[in-house]
Image 1 (cartoon, rainbow, N blue to C red):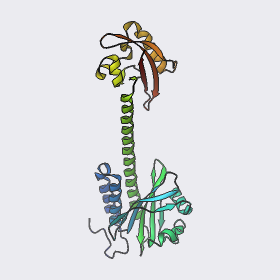
Image 2 (cartoon, helix red, strand yellow):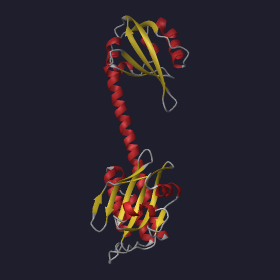
Image 3 (cartoon, rainbow, N blue to C red):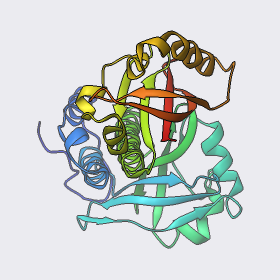
Image 4 (cartoon, one colour):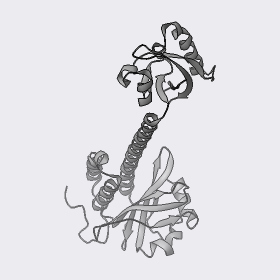
Length: 307
């Protein structure tokens, strides 16, 4: 691709638009989006963005949940080759800058001390870091501001051309993709943990529990106490219709009670009998809890207690 850095080291020099497009495309094809941790992905993106653009500092900042503070997740400094993190900017201290992030597609400050949206950062941030020009691209997830990608020139500066802005937006899009992937992975992990906890509680219950499909009445799961009460294995219970657990003479009545519970027409416990795997009839009391789940289905949890 040719040299990506300015030999002089002070003034940033972008690659050509075609090379930038290919560079961003190569980043987006990178396997680390699905295989690496979020920290590694952000580290790769900031370093690649700095090397491609020749900009001294590239950072990724995240808004706190209350939208009142930006915290630096990752920053790469090209001259030293260091990856850093930490530091915060508060909305109460810099209200104009935060307002600009919420209202502008980007903040392109060719002179950070003169630009109306960045000048308030002068004492606390710009001077201490020797920043002379700043290109900040907001990061949105599902339409909500979540952070910002910052490209920062140090010392001598050049204007932020349309090529810079296009490049910054493309990298910001990749950061958004990485954050969405991380959010989805975290949601899946939390869902799996919740499922494991639910199964642990389900299995540890002192009551016999049967989980059934609310629409069909087919048993989906059974705990260990249910195996003991019904005298058969979980694999033998799963797949049966709930009415098959009762003596033939009671099956029509029990099917009707089940439907009334599922449809919210009854909340009363039912006293009836079940027929064990060995044929023995056992009197029980059944309570039913019904839950609607996300795909429109209903689940019925039957709590069986021997009388």
